[in-house]
Image 1 (cartoon, chains in turn blue, purple, cyan):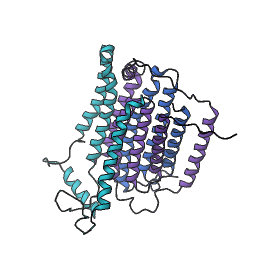
Image 2 (image 1 turned 90 degrees about the horizontal axis):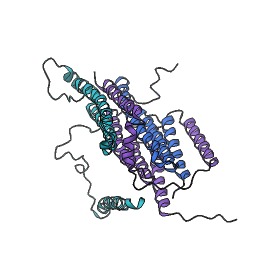
Image 3 (image 1 turned 120 degrees about the horizontal axis):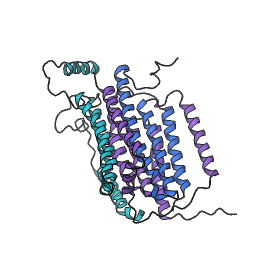
Image 4 (image 1 turned 30 degrees about the vertical axis):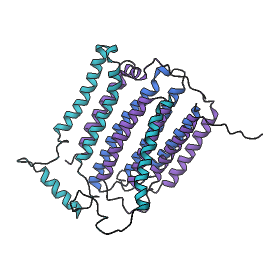
Length: 103
Length: 172
Length: 140
């Protein structure tokens, strides 16, 4: 049996990768990919906690993970549509150049 | 006292291989120079997560992961890359000007998570799943009983996302 | 348990091994006589007339997005269908509401012309022409 902490370490690493991608990438689509990685890390945690909890038949962790998948899909659809709309207006997807709201 | 290295079981070996694959793909997603390679590594990472779900005996979630993430979201990302292509070629670095601070913040976050992980005595063993229990049927039951409000809210969210994305992405 | 997935693992290893052999052997054994025509992209016999890296029509994205939404619908439908005969009418109504909500989004997409690829120009329809002009300007 794999100890629970192994799953948690993997999830922590994936989340860190996603966080770095969301903070440090220049392309807006790459930022979105980082966010997807973070959501996946959260999913690993949810399912692992479900599996190692006392109540396996309760399934709350799996239900939450499915909802997260759905929310991630909605987020990706709208986020990428926003990027496409911005690209059409500004001819760039570089987050450094999208600074109209910067003071 | 000599450090004993316990002999890993077969499941543990499979987990380690899949975890290394997933982690490597996840890292390549964020450091790859070519955006398209990033998307392909993202597919690899998502597949690794699906394998982790199988190891956790959440088979339906693994199928959902492959179907929704790899089948649909990855396609969406690739299409978005094709739609916005051309501007990012020939750039020197895929990173923005705060990438150093971002890396530092992410690293501090990771170390903090690990420190927290070490403090809690996590369970080593999971309970066996009852054989006569159909988990997929249980999921279906949960959607229409306990989590019905969230379920309908997801439907609403998807509708709003669909309409919003069409309004944003349509030419005029 | 995990042993049930052994055939899947073997399949993955076989598939990867086949791909590695199919791509590796020609690279090692095959003669290398490069010329310009060999390195052109294969377009089923047609000579490529434009760079493949130009912008794609946005309709690709809209179709992919519709696919995402209904993919998720399948994920939610499946567990529900497994247990439907034990749940009764209430579950049926709940799923009907869910499907109806998604249908509203779908009908909206249809009415806004998200599925319209602009293949034929209808009378009084200047959208297609202006799109063509726009894409030509971008290519310059």
